[in-house]
Length: 149
Image (cartoon, helix red, strand yellow):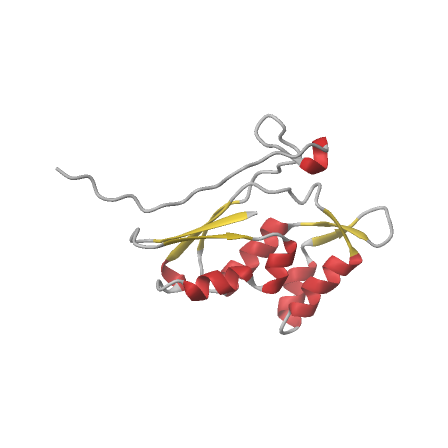
C-alpha cells in the first residue's frame, strides 16, 4: 500500500510502501520521523491496496501486529482489524485500518484515501492475487515549482 505524505504548506513530500511487514516494522513512523514538518502539519493519503474483504493472512501475521502493541489499548486497537475466516488460523486483515491507526497515533489527523480494493476492482487495478499475472502500479507525489509570471 503506498502512503503519500505532504506538508500542508506544500513544502515537503514523502512516500512509503506499507505492506504488512512494513507496517509491523514501523515504516510509517520512520517516514514521519524523517520529515522536517511536524506530524500535526502533515496530510497522508492511503493509495490502492487489497482491501479487508480479501486480504487473508495467517495467525503469524496477526501475532506480529499484536506483538508491537505497547499497551492494552494499542493491542485492542489492532485486534479489531483482524476478522476470523471459516478456516482455522486465517484472518481477513484491514491494512487500511491499521495504517490509519498508526498515522493517528503518530499525530496525523488528516488522512485520506483507503477506499479501494485492488482485488475487487479489476476495471481499475491489477492484482496478482486475483489474476495470477504480474503487473505494475505506481503512485507519485511531487512538489511543483510555482508558475513564473
